[in-house]
Length: 413
Ligand code: GDD
Ligand code: MN
Image (cartoon, rainbow, N blue to C red; front, side, top):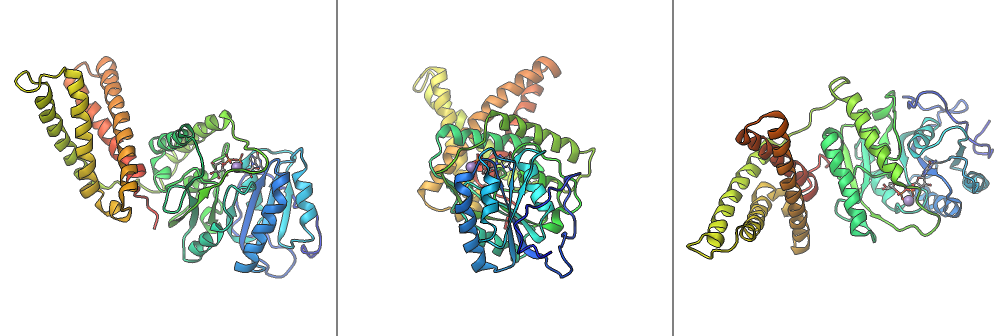
């Protein structure tokens, strides 16, 4: 049967969530494709026609007849799957899967990939919040040899359209949590929450994927064999039709997912790659930190000493601390991470780095006090040893999180 001429639904694969190494080709000819792009949908009735038409136009131009679009719908009550199915005669590259027994974004994507024939597997949201134009950039990066190409909100050209401070903070908080629990996975990309990416089939074939919730990219990097990663910036658009399915449940699932991946890919599982720890940068960061201690002391003396300004101690310390943070920022920006700041010139990016550095260092201070108390009260009843441990932990925190968020040094080319 020629699949171009029928508009029957794709069969839903069952069993383990594993991508076959060789695509399931239909018929007898070799009809494997370059790109299989999955569009997971749940209640996207008002978006589906639009996105299918935009993506088809784009891909017909870039890689005519060498792609397929696979809508994977979880039996939406608004009958998104039916609308998608009705589009099939008009869009010969479109396939539709209706899942009635399984639920969830991540497994929907994998089920779609299991039925795919492409050598590159991709995913894009069905609500047009991911700008379709970025697809061609991702494709180029794959063709240039990347194993995985993702659209990122956190590189040049990327961003979020009108998110509140709270929403940005929550999103970054989730990223930082991941950087602590799973540094080897989340440290590799600038936007680990992205649900807009492509991966080479060979990089994830035969790995049994076991995702929870929304963040399929973590699973792919964590369990696949992804060597080279590339990124392209994109602006996360606002939704115009339908609504987001994210609730607080997804935050819990995210944490659950992080821990599960940690346990199964950690010491007990196979260790795929060591975290690439930049020793030289860390030593510079430490030296700058020491200079900060010196600045802090001098300012504290100038402000609070009875022979100088004789300010109250707390007020003096707040000033001294902030000036030390400023001092450290300047040195880190000009020396420790000079290569990165060179690429992000101008006052606005610099101010952004400074604000991030500041927030991270203040969180580091809280961590410092917390660790000091925990170690002193429960582990080592010696305040100086406890303080030494607290400073070490806070320094590593400051270094790692600033490395990944303020001066973003990802593995990405
Ligand atoms: N099949 C299926 N099953 N699709 C789903 C489900 C589900 O249970 N839940 C959501 N989707 C579909 C939506 O219809 C939409 O096309 C896409 O997955 C993203 O869902 P949204 O609810 O719109 O998520 P968002 O706007 O908060 O986006 C967040 O998640 C994305 C994951 O792809 C952000 O983190 C994005 O950056 C990320 O790309
Ligand atoms: Mn969305």
